[in-house]
Length: 615
Image (cartoon, rainbow, N blue to C red; front, top):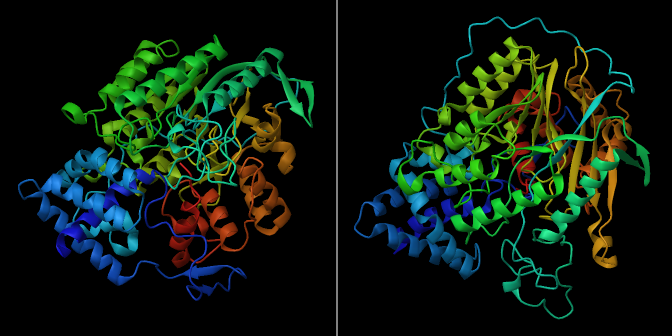
């Protein structure tokens, strides 16, 4: 019985890791036990962490994973283990009974198939689940490299001054992480004890507790369709009137209205323990039709999020056979998005969920399937060597763009700094090589307003790229809904196609629910809010340096990060962890944060920061 319980715990941990869809199980809480940190003499008040993973926990994990392998070899072992996993999940109160049972049944086939075919040994599995203190966080073949084409890198031109205000500019609408909940119910229980609440099946709230708001809720809830419609109505109004909002007054814009839109995934809600393929397809078609209704002839370039699949985070390589294949999803996306994408883009979308398209002469969009780099995609435990050949394809697209004098915008869901290490470092290497071609990078996933820096690989001192992580539509959790418009260098000779400014809009949820009237407002414009002359990589690097010493400036950034709704200040280790994350365009790289902490402290900072990821 003890052996089965241990094995079931391991399977329950694997299932719940996928169920969480956010930080891995080893992500640390904000407050750790006293004495865990030692003072860092390099930066007063910053502390270093010893590993929170005890030797005993790691040993138990390795033992349990070994028992999972042994149990699966027995007749009926898969079903028996799933039942035991659900029981352990309930007894340990990892989730309530309904979630535990539904999750183990939904994830059973997916997790067991990966375990049976994975080359990971128990130590590596525990490294993935509990962090590198318990073992290598990846398969033994994890060190692989993408081949760059044998073409010399063009000389890097120093950035020039921003174009004058009279120069043409494009406006790009950016929407991410909608997480529409079709079962959202105004007045329902918003503190239901499950990962997602505010749903019709949750019933009425407890006496004295407020129910779910009409337009959304700050608690563990996603958004109703009416909130998504309200957002699109506001974005469309701006497109037609060609205006920017400054301090609640409308002023004439300098562009030609929204030229195109980027939509970087995560359409369905967070009830991942009960979602079927049909549920995901309904979310895809419903929200896609909503975009078409409100945006009209504006071309939308979508990217695949980690919540689009069923089960969540399940994105096998294209070679996966039968019911394990993602063809059901990619084919549906190709059909739904054929109104926006050219036929050659649909070919690679059907193959692996990625594509490229020419947005206009001189500007190419590359949409990457970042699930092929995700630490929560268990399929990569079988083989994570450039899944679907996507990065090699990316290199070939970039080389062709360089040859043709095109600039490139890269879009995706999960930012590269959150990816598996080898994938992330290969991506970073590609960005270094094609820094003169890649004009901008846009991602989502974290639900908050952030960015990631890229520096030259030789010295890690010359900033050469920035990836924007834009705020979510969903309120999940404790956030206002939001969206963004990017000002892009427009059609002119020697256009950089770079981001010149961005404007973030939000809905004050408390006000909207109280007045029953959604009023979208400008939260901030980047250049004005942070006193930046431009938004080049060097300017963002300078902002990081200023925020390190200027607590008031950092507090403004923290307020914007949460879309104007933040209940707790970020000080001490919280601040250092965030500044470290903003510097880190590649994952697990202590050198990126050498100015902030000693290398041995880096793992602790990553743990703290990952706890804030709300995906």
